[in-house]
Image 1: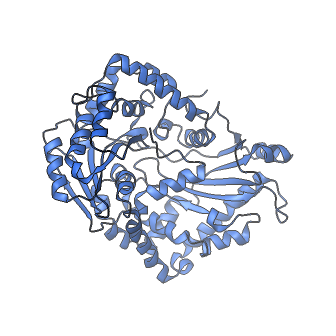
Image 2: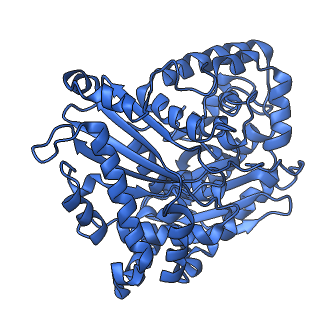
Image 3: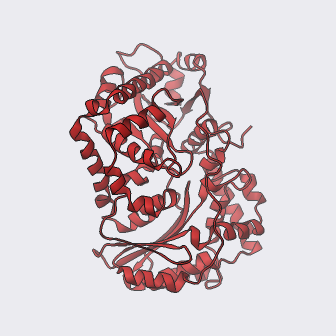
Length: 492
């Protein structure tokens, strides 16, 4: 299945999360229409009449953030099962035949940190068929013991690959250590033992708890009319009933653990450079929504490669790569949100005499010092005119994202719905415009200035072996070395 969170590096994971996050596009552009059915199902329509196609996506809140120690990985398993059979299409062959009969050009599904979705792109005149198809799949799945056991084996083989993927287990290693109380909320795949122990009764309970209209969304983008979509939604989903879903992310993740320092020697990483990342606990949109708007605006102010923040780091940190490789992100999340700074350092540099671990800490300290300068007087640091320009860039980002309505409804739009909800999206432009420099100053002082941090260093195995100071200095500074056997929360 297509899991959108599989990216080539920790830096890219955070960057990609930002690109899909509400701050990357949550204004309310005119081509979007919205209704909520009496049973709780939410329906969004994004008009784009450039080509006669329609993308139909049905999604649910859930995924990693809704897992427990014993259910971690089961949302992913359930995702697989819905592609097998239902009361209307009683076999995988019938399921695929129905897709082919609609002239499907694209179909897939994915399990993410905060949601699960299924989608297909069809000729626009098959809109009703596509909506009915997904209604049958999510409302009336058929679970059979033989196919269930086979699909468990498929999923186990799939997640074995994740568990030895350096990009995945480095990401998991960090979250295991900064969130030791509920680390499974940041790990989609879970341990093999959970999948192996899963039963059909557990799948049926998951259906009753999570696959209900009050926890669901239908998103349609393309050459469609809103009223036609709303009519199709009522016809296919209107009589669907279910209980109220459980609350997600309760109890909340606490602040990040103190003194987390990770070093990772990666045989596949780029020679000559190291990746340094620093993270802080950020605001959860479910609990501190006003802080999330300020965070979006602040990070937009800091993003310019010729802006004061990045230029100060370039001046003060020898061996720092191009400003385009320096980023500060806040991927909006309902629970366990983080601020993340990342940059590339040359492993050796004529103006940098210290060992790489010391230089990484110097970079972290330079970032913290610059954040303190911003917090003293954000208006003076950035300039009065920059604030409105940053807000406008955030709002305008939707225009670009919506050029591809299929990607918009299955990615950006589904993401913010699952993380923040409809009203947050609909009010985003107004709330973004209300952010002041005083709100940004408050945000900095609450989350980033003198707050606990975690730091990671990723370096190629070859560079690590060639640098006799690397390991002794990392150990002296209390870095823990990450590998596949100690990364995951279920490892000893």
